[in-house]
Image (cartoon, rainbow, N blue to C red; front, side):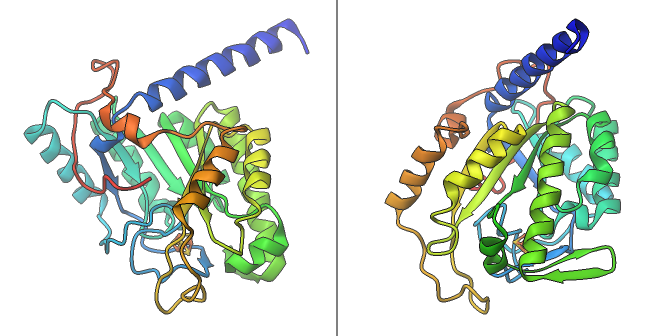
Length: 293
Ligand code: SF4
């Protein structure tokens, strides 16, 4: 590697670490969820499509999507009324942002134009991120959460019913294999562009519970920066309706294990945290959806 490349690589690492530290220092309680994506490009066996994407939050809250205009009005209202707090604009659900790329990208462009300094994050299944990575970088997206529930297609095929790519529907191990392929590409591409990649896994007892170490090891090697585990909660009328929820001790053990490979943003610490650089971040607030982990 040339000195120039080595130095660029080193600078990239430092810059990514700074971004991560800054992101971790934010009070994520003061974030606002922006649901603009109505549809999803896959079907998970635990999802009933009635609430926020279950991969991203287990908060069982029904949501309606907002138009870009609604989003801006909502943000403006918040800046007017609550001027002393920070906000992260978190674009997530109820479907997948990149299954609805037109609405998602238009919303991000509008937010960035109106609020040049606001921290914007996104949550996605990772299937269709690749066409947008360069624009996401240009729009200064701080963090993207990708949910990875399996890195082995035999396990993934138990979790996912189907995925859609263009006009084609894939099922079984092929679907799981393709999904993981696209997730790997997305993690690497975002990491290369110095966008923080946070991985979330849903801990599903008896399905992927013995697979967590393999997941976190794989995503760490691809350049993900943060890893979180969310406990599965069964939803009626889904394939996984009869599965039981994990015990708290199982989640604690899995989180302990994953810490050997990647840190987890500690929500308790974040609740107490304040942004270290108020001048840099647009001040906003929202009490909505603070339970998302
Ligand atoms: S990615 Fe999210 S919205 Fe789509 S099927 Fe899975 S849980 Fe539901």
